[in-house]
Length: 426
Image 1 (spheres, one colour):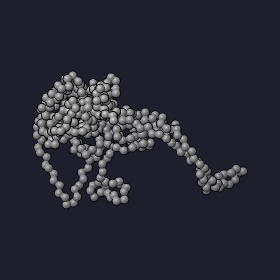
Image 2: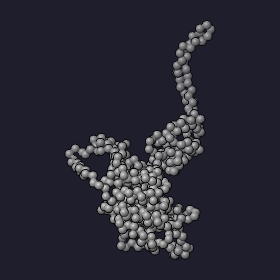
Image 3: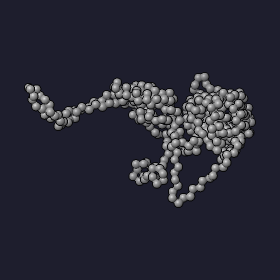
Image 4: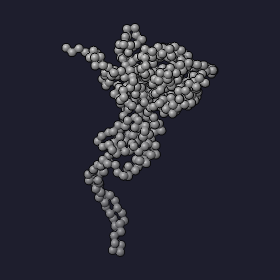
């Protein structure tokens, strides 16, 4: 319910005036709004919100004033004693759609003070006042209008208050009077062992061959390997068995995992590097049926699906497996978290072999195994865990196979195959 709705009441008694969720979809920041936005310390827009700029419109209003003046004559000259406005009349107005030099100078100084590049001001000047120029995420990052490619989740995600240290905007909401709240006493810290446990609702990692489907790519759509679930000691062998079925083809691995066995992640990462595969974090959404269902069959062993960056997660031991990729991508809406996982010397040697900086191990070491820390895109890029700021769409997007040369994970469909799959015309 909107805060200004008639029946909406504040919740001051519960520790917060209102309760709600922040959604990027449909959110806009246009015209003068980006100037206010530029004042933030951390500024995020994401790919689902809309930020646009245009030329400034200045309205000039003419006013006709009537004065009553009192004066006296001294030595033959008038000496004004008082001057008072006694009448005011609108004399019309006019607008200008070009930024004046004085306004441009003030805006340039403001943006410079906020650390924003002048490219934003140039875009404003070059866009008619009757239009809106949407700024692309990477353009905003390059101009430093945004401080990262994250979305609003960076500042409002429920998991923020589970991190160490706790985010500054987290607040404990007191329980209503009469309710009993139980707090568990922290157990004594135990030595960190290799992580082998797994969540009850997440099974062992499965590997599935997937082919995209979209009117933007048919008939030549990208293919990839979906890696979903908890990493176990059997994960490397399962991946090897699947790779043996595709021969020399180099398909990207799209991973979505809460973590799992460290030794299994190390071995899987080495296998990925051995086969020179790319890796991205995202969830694969299957079209038609789930591969683990008994009645779900795939044509030629390849299921149909698409990748969803926003639902992708890679935690605990998963970043170790990710580090094996030749190209490694974690989109701004995917989530990657780290914490201490043990086997530090082996992990350190492995990361060095994968050309990943020691900063990743430092970040992992700084967080107890009972907690997790979410890494921002710039941080992942800085420590060398990712090789770019892109997302899984670079490997699996519907336009992937339109680039030249065509990526290796694009299977060219022959004319006969297209005709065989086309519906019969009556």
